[in-house]
Image 1 (cartoon, rainbow, N blue to C red):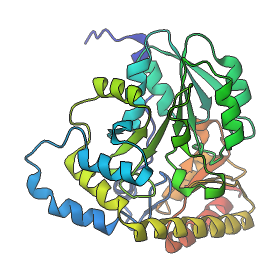
Image 2 (cartoon, one colour; image 1 turned 180 degrees about the horizontal axis):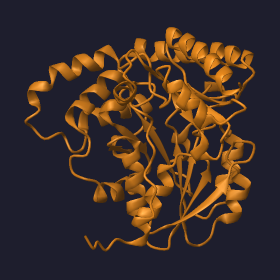
Image 3 (cartoon, helix red, strand yellow; image 1 turned 180 degrees about the vertical axis):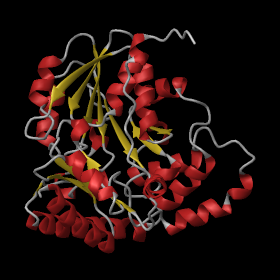
Image 4 (cartoon, rainbow, N blue to C red; image 1 turned 90 degrees about the horizontal axis):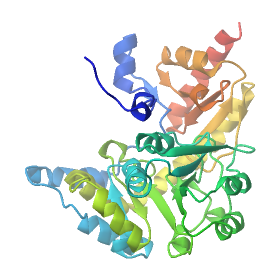
Length: 366
């Protein structure tokens, strides 16, 4: 073939997803594996969501509601916003893509941090935009330096708060000082995929900034605390004018019908939500204590995952852990070669991880 592919597409590096359990078991001929790499909810989905999916299987021959009416109404009531301020996507990933598609053209600049969620830069490059990347400072967003990189061509600033992969956050006063120094032509995208895990005492309220002179868009997902990662449903909270532009570029039936009914049911399952938070907080505390005993260094987090400096090649440790049937995330691709990222699991998964990690660390250091 003699394909003619634009350079910005030909040079894109695909997003490296976590290894699926079934792929691991096929590759190594093992069973009973556990996955603690992709920040999923180890409790599984809400039982109410499963019931809702079962009840709606008979309608699979119908197209989904393109406006997600019932989901928008339920979520708007819960958040105290107007349904017109919500835009839903095939995961919050798609809302990122919609923002870039609506506001970024060739030569336009988008500011992101490194390391952070890799999809931001991928989407910008795919639209021939220019990625302006600011390194983290002390594993957190360097808002002061980000301000110095803003130009007349800056269209979007992506800030994942908490940050992925470090689990760090910034506070209200810091954020508001940052906003006050920006030109009104910039949209700040506050990616809050892990907001439910943040201590309420230090949690930002993105709703305060939707009508700000410098507009703020909040991104959230049902993939984490609600346990619906496999259904791919996320959303953005934003000013109605911004939402209107995103609706112009989104696909007409972008959120499938089962995802919509499951998300509504999950929002109403308060027991599952609280159980997830309790499991996560207890798991973080226990895992950090036990992993530190192995001679590693764990880092504080406001998410359902945390970073660990293992003092050796994280990729090599990851490979050894696979043979134990335990999937973790090496941080080599993020610029942290001696780090791994661990998602909190159930109590039994956490115990298995610590045992396997101890054995693998011993093997690596021999």
